[in-house]
Each structure stands twice: as C-alpha cells, then as structure tokens.
Amino acid sequence: MKKINSIVLAAPLAFFIACSGSSNKDKIGRAKQFPKPGTIVAAAETPIAEDSLNHATFSVKVIADSNVSSGIYDVDVDYGNNFAEGQITMPKGGEDFKPVIRKGDAPNIYIIGFRAPADSTFYDYFQVTSNRKATQMEYIKAYSFTSE
Image 1 (tube, rainbow, N blue to C red):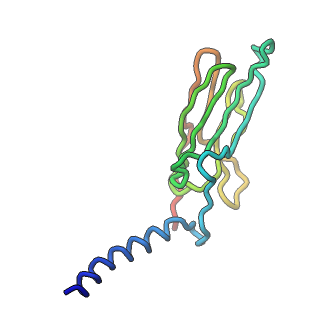
Image 2 (cartoon, rainbow, N blue to C red; image 1 turned 90 degrees about the horizontal axis):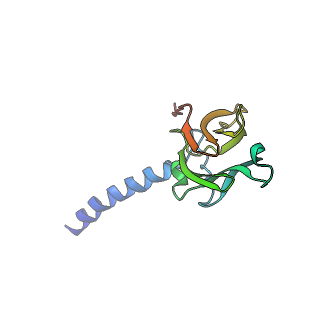
Image 3 (cartoon, rainbow, N blue to C red; image 1 turned 90 degrees about the vertical axis):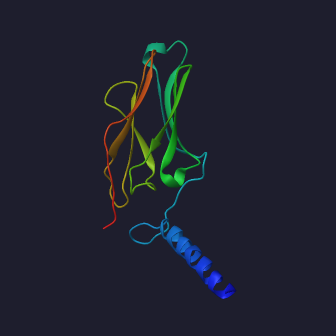
C-alpha cells in the first residue's frame, strides 16, 4: 500500500517539475534571461526647457520588478521635483524582451518599447508624458507573441 501511495504522490510532483522547467525556455529552447530585481534596465533624461534656472530634468527609468520573470517592470518618472511611478508588463510571449527607451515626437515624451530577438525594429509599446501639472503613463500599442 505504501508503494502505491508513493507512486501516486510522485507522479504529480514529477509532472509539476517537468512543466515548470520548460516554461523558462524560448521557442528555440534557449534559457530565458531576466535581470535581477531592482536593476535599472533602461533610463533616459532630458533638461526641461521651461525651467533652465533650476536645471530641472525630465527622466524615466525602467527597473526590473520582483516579478520580472512575468515581464513586469517598474517605471519611475521625475519631472523636476515631481515624482511618479507605475508598472509596465511586457507582451504575452515576450516576457523576456528587454525594454528600451527612445525620445518621443514632442517635448517631454518618452516611448518605452522593445526589440524582438533577431530583429532591429523598435516596437512602440508604452508612452510616458509629463509636464508641470501631471504625468501620464499609458499603453499605446498591443502585441502578443505565441510559439508555433
């Protein structure tokens, strides 16, 4: 009887280990790489033209969250003395993509996006806009990457 109970308990455990081990592999079978929580993975800064007297800056930092393996990053924004924070979740299937920041088309706008492996295209994903009155963070496009 003990032998049957051991087999019954061992089978689900083996299945769980096998399934959880395969979730950290990409389509090619490579192990996914994630930064350590708390690591700044992207940052950008520009002087605020309207406040040259105080040498104020508009800066955006993307920081790996404790759930970085799920594609979650913290976004810290400083506009002069004002601070805002939020979170961004990378697209489904692209949890291991590294966030990249580029300047937007207008002043005080940064775009957070990513580049897919083996592709040099910058994919716009999240926009951060700030001024003296408010800071806005919003998704601007949606993506999903599935394995075939």
